[in-house]
Length: 398
Image (cartoon, rainbow, N blue to C red; front, side, top):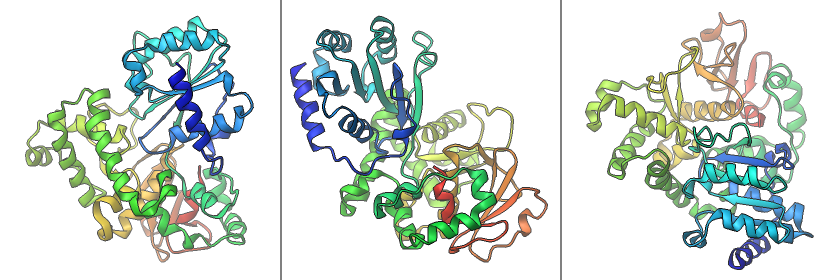
C-alpha cells in the first residue's frame, strides 16, 4: 500500500490546479458511491486528481487515489487495499480505470455494503456496464458521463474566461442577446477552427505537435484493448473494425447499406450491426436513428457520423468536408444532454420537437419551412437573427 500512496502523492504534486472541467461543480461529491464514465482521453484521470488537490490539499491522509491497471493489483486485491486504508482512517477512495479490474462491479458492491463510512469515486470506459445482474450498481452509484471539451470550455481554457453553459431553450429563444454579450468579450472565430481540429480532447493542453499522434493512440487503445476487454471482441476482428471506421470517415455522414457493406468487409450482417453499435458505444462514431420509440440493439442506423470533428481531421486531414464538419460539431454538442434523431426535414430532430438544419451563413429555411419549431444553425455568422442561430453558439450547451 505504501507504494500506491507514494505514487499518488507524486501524481498530486505534478497536477496543475487550473483548467477545471465544469462537471466538477455538477458532481455530488459527498455521495457514497460515484461513477464517472467517459471515452478514453476525455480527461477522467485529470478530473479526479484536480478535485483531490483542490479539496484535500490539507488532508491527504484521508484520501487515496489508485489506478486499477497498476501492477500492484497483480499481487493484491482491491478489498485488501480498501480494508487497510479504512483501518488507517481513510475516508475517500478514488479508483481509476475500474474496468481493468476483474469482477470490479461485485467488488464495489461489497465495499459499498461493508464500509458505509467510506466514500468511493470510480472512473471507467464509456463502454462500462453498471447493470450487471450479479452486482447491480445502478441503485447504489450516482453515475456521470464525461464528454470531451465543449467549445465553451475550450474558450474558457484558452482565454481565461468564465462563460457558463446555456440551456438549449434559452439559446434558441435568446441567441441574439446572448451572442452580443459573448462577442463583447471575445471573437469566437479566432478559436473555432482550432477547436474543430484539435480542441476536443483535453490533452491538447500538453502540446499541439503531438496531438494527432496521441489521438491515434487513443483510437487504437479503444479498438485493441477496451473493445476486446469490455465487449469480448475477438482481437482477430480488430482489422475489420479499423476498416469499418475508415469507411465511415471517408463518407461521413455515412448512410449505411448493410448488405453491401457486409460484403465489402466480408463479415455477416448481424456481426456488422454489432460492430456499428460497438463503435458508437465507444464514442468513436455516432449512430443516428429515426425518431422512433425504442431502438433495437441491432437496428440499422440511418446515418453514421464520427463522434467529433477532431476525429474527422485525424482520418481526413485537409480533406475534411466543411458541411460534414458543421454537422458533426452540432450533433456532438447537442447529444450530450439531448435526444437527437434522424429526420428528412432538416438535419436533426432534437427531443422529438425541434428541427435544426445546418449550413453556411446564407442557408435558407426552405428545407424546414413546414416545421413549427425549425431553426438554422449557420456557420460563419457572428450574430444571428430570428430563427437563424450562429453555429458556434451551440458550443455553449455544456
